[in-house]
Length: 212
Image 1 (cartoon, helix red, strand yellow):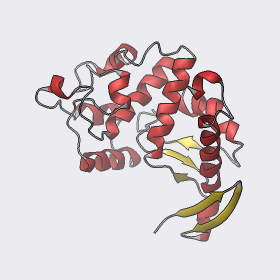
Image 2 (cartoon, helix red, strand yellow):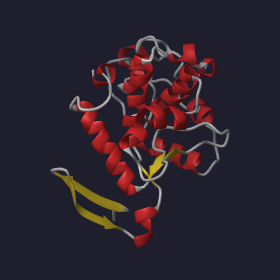
Image 3 (cartoon, one colour):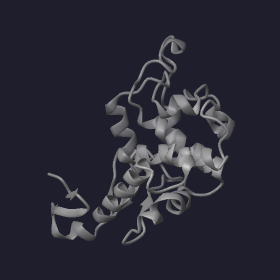
Image 4 (cartoon, helix red, strand yellow):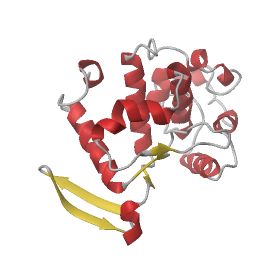
């Protein structure tokens, strides 16, 4: 059953239901919508010239990626999930659980991955749903912007949605935010954020750069 179900139609909240009454005022995770939010932050960092190009190597921003399966990846290959890294949905679930429970760091989950055979044949060509790719982007964002993701996301997107209360990104045991499925907010604040993103897409909010 869904934790929260909200329907927005023609400028009005027309349906609202929760799995339990207390969930109405509880922070709940956006799960993989966090990947879209991460891509939005990459776009903002490009506009802010914190990131030079989507064709930059991730390891340029995060030297700790050297020697991992992602050391040859560009930001573009990470966003499009054409990394050439072996990854399965089951691995993604295991990684997320270990991060949620504080059992591993982001870098430890990255280090466990290996490249696909003939990686060059897959790179920027073959889509493979990859949770860890989004975590790599999170590390890039923190290094490029030199500020925590909580602050960067709040200042550039979340506060503009006029939330009821602050949201937050979960952190691994080393204190780094992971982005594969970890943004928490009230259900109504998730809705407010979605409406704000829709306004950006329509050209009704944000600046010209982020609208593009």
